[in-house]
Length: 205
Image (cartoon, rainbow, N blue to C red; front, top):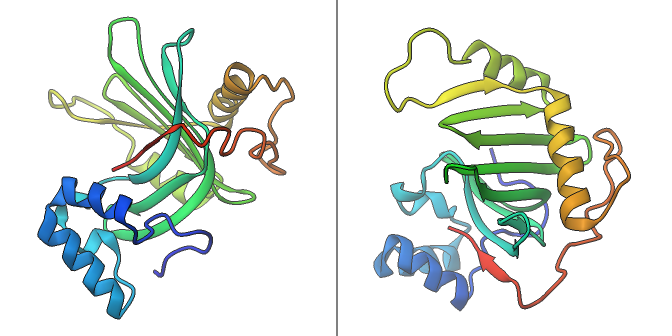
């Protein structure tokens, strides 16, 4: 499958090459640059270190002291999902915070195109997933964790639309001061906060 349309997530520039070098080594970064000078080469093909569930290669984040959380203020650059090259900037909502006992919580809603979206919630070693793609949801349900699990094993949970909307509407109310309910069928409201500040941290990899 070729990369999605839209702005590139992995621009070949000095800033990104330095980040890549810090992660997978200088030689691999140079190879990535030289290979792309000849033909398009996916970043994930350069190093197995990047063959992960979902690699976010760039996003601007703000800190909210009241919620003690990080939230995105820009489009989300998706490099790859496992070995599949994506290399596209997408609309979405990303929140990273801690629970009451200091465990990580991650909420991520990404929209590849209007009406085509995915929601992920990770906490307590559990990954909840829901999408506009019914076949994808069926696949998650068929692989949902059940029975006795091994210590440390990730628990896969099939989500629902209500959980997706609860996260989005809470995100918009808390971080963007938007009360209007979000419509998954006719999504609007991303432009209110994208690139809100050029001084925000650009996190990724």
